[in-house]
Image 1 (tube, rainbow, N blue to C red):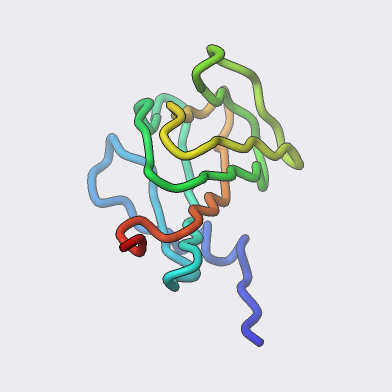
Image 2 (cartoon, one colour):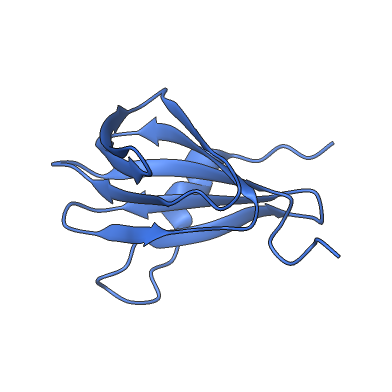
Length: 111
């Protein structure tokens, strides 16, 4: 068993570029990749698609999630699920949005 401290991982997440959200991979296997995002006000992850199912759990803060049906507000405790190939994106609201993304199976793990 491994215990992952998601709030610590979110705080320690690294920004590759000041305009992009900070991210950290907290688990990576063929079955699933788990990534935390720290999205500051004004930052976003542009809508895109994945060959895997994607689940987004809002850990803290609030923001907007986008999908095939448009945009929906999200706040701490909310879970959004996306089917493989479904458009998804995220952006912070007026405060920092921390998210856990569960991507299953891990991209590239399919034969």
